[in-house]
Each structure stands twice: as structure tokens, then as C-alpha cells.
Length: 174
Length: 266
Figure (cartoon, one colour):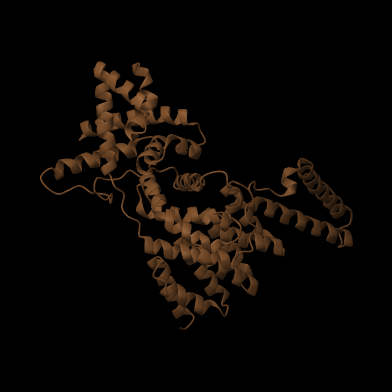
């Protein structure tokens, strides 16, 4: 990113290759919408170009990138009138589930879990997505959210508790 | 370890990043506390299940093609200033005295114009001068509206530009910048409309063509096609042909470009 900031814009292609999948994964899990996630990845890289001068050497590149991604996603929701996309059971979440007899039950659980995740408050879901799917530590998440690691730990505990409750609620509702 | 000590350690417990002594303390607590054990077991199970919820893979080839086009478009039209660490608004927005001076100027012009019109109904150099000042003030207001945070204010700015009799090059440039970089689709669409009356200018058409690759909204793309058709510039045919053949674009945009090509007789 230093090279991009200093004027070699073509080097952004290297960063795109390296990070677009992780960004897509994050944005897809936050929006539940494949097309929106692809558009937002594009938006994030355009913002990196525009705001390249704000990149500082003292932090991790991923922290800066995910901050931009959060802003892009927040703008997206604002433009959509804060509409939150709630996935249907049959939406295109890919599944690695194997196919024998337990498949049906497992697919149901998976669908419930997706609905429970989408039912969470956005900031709670974001926390779980960053930790579970981006594999971030609480320090890294804290750097992105602008809070200390202790706060992340406490918020994470709340988020996981709410997810448990939401999952139980969804299961009861079925 | 007490039950309350568990909460801040759940994340590390699940991630397997607890130091050995803390892990041993948690395990010891869990053997003695059925409520915590049940909570932790359920959480760990949920955590495992979450790991099986995969997201689809992105269409990397298509995304890369879009990225390359956007990067190229950015590099081609790179006369925009890079946003600095702290974006600085224009000096007059930072200085309250400048804003006051602006308001006072408007007042003086208004009062002056009223007096001159009352006392000297026939045309005079004073009236011409005041009219010019009024035009300048209106232009300044338009430019300031185009820089506002609120999209509705920026829309007012675009609309205000259409009411200027002889907008200066600053206003035209601001409209082009709005078209290129405004995050709001409605504002960008309005800017295309406002730019229509300058479609006869080669420079404006060139700027509009340069802004095309940056536009991802089919609505704006179609508005730009209409602009080019109306402006009837020499570049329209080649641009429309490129759009009609670009499989990355929305079908409605390609169809509109193809129809446009027929309109210009190609």
C-alpha cells in the first residue's frame, strides 16, 4: 500500500488479488447479498485509491482496509434506507455439508443459524463475522472498531449470547 | 475462578488462544459449575456450527475485470486531488467572518440594487455592475451547495446551477466533479441533466466520456448515453459501440447503447 500511496497505482492490483476474497466474504456475510458484496468490494478499492494519502505505515494494512470496508457498507445501508437484507433459507449461501441421511437436519440447522445471524444487531453480527470468519484476534478487531481489546471481549460475549438466544428462538419458531 | 470471570475469556477459549494456566482454571470451574458448563458447551457447539456456514466464492475474474477498468478510468482522469489525511473544506467555509462577509455582500447588493432600480430606472453602468455581482454571488452559492455533506443540499446546488444564466467554468467543472465522484446516484443523475446544456462544448463531452467507466449505476450510464446522443458529438458512435459490446454492463444499458447506435444511423 505504501507504493500505491506514493504514486504507483498499478500496485493496487496486487492488493486486490490478495484481499478481494476476504473482503467479499466479510461484505457478503454483512449484507447477505452477493451482488451488493461485489459492488462494495469494488467501492472499497476505489476508496483506497481516493484516500490513499490517509494510509499510515504504523498500522496493519488489513485494519485500514476493513475500516474502509465498514464505511462503504454503512454508506450502502444508508443509501438503501437502512433496509437489512434477511436471507431466505434457499439463498445462495454455499454449503460444505456432506450428503447422506443427516443432510436434511443439518441443512435445517444451517438455515436456522443463518437466520439467527442475520437477526442479530448489525454490530453484534460484525463482531462474530470478524472473529469467526476473518480469524481476527480481539486486538485486531479492536483496532478496526476503535475500541480496546477488553471491550471487544465483553461485546463478543454479549454477541455470542444473543446469537444463542436468536438461534433458539428461530428453532422454536420453525 | 468465578462464573463472572468466564465472560471475557469466552473468545480466547473458543479460539484456543488461552494461556495454559487460564485454560486449566476454566476447566476446573466448568467441572464444578453445571450452569457454566452447559453454557460453554452450547456456545462451543454453536461456534463449531458457525464454521460450517460458508459464503459463496466471489466471481474473481469478473471482479478483477471491473477493478482493472475502474483503475484505468481513475488513472486516465487523474486530475482530481487526492484526499489528504484531513480533508480541508474551502477556506471560506472554515472562516465564519468570510461567511458573514458573504451574507453582508448579499445584503448590500440587495439594498443597492433596490435603491438603484428605484432612483435610476434606465440602464446604467451601476446596474450592470450590480447584476454582475449578483451573478457572482449566485454562482458562489451554487458552488458551496455542491460541496455540502447532505445529498439534498447538493441536489439543490445542481438545480441552482441550471438557473444561472451564464455559469462560469468553475460551475461546469464542479458539475463534472459531481458526476464523477458524488456517492449519491440521484445527485449524479441530476448533474448529467445539468450538464446537458453544455453538451456542445468539446471539453465537457470529453469529461463526460472520461467519467463513463467510473459509473456503475445503470441509471447514470443510460443518462450519459442520452447525453451523448443529444450532444451529437463526433465521439458518440465509438463510445456507444463500446458500451453496446461491453458484456460487463447491465443488459438495459447495452440495449440503450445499441438503440442509440441505430439512432445515429450505425
